[in-house]
Image (cartoon, rainbow, N blue to C red):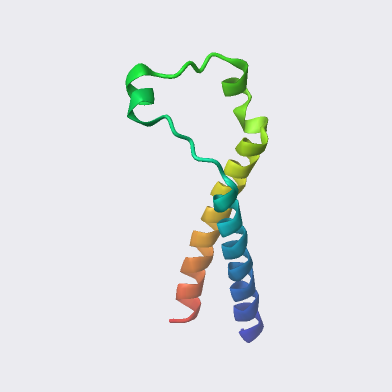
Length: 81
């Protein structure tokens, strides 16, 4: 059981570091209140293919790592109780 704890803690630390780096590298999406009032044109090529860009892949990786982070947080809470 001790080996499993060490593996989970190691994976948790690696995910934390990668998540911090990914969040710091992402650009700020700033449409703000004016974008909500005026509305953005989502009928262009970039908006349709946003998931295939580098920013889209980074956003998807961040979401996946955040889900893993929460799952491992709950797992560590259960293991160490």
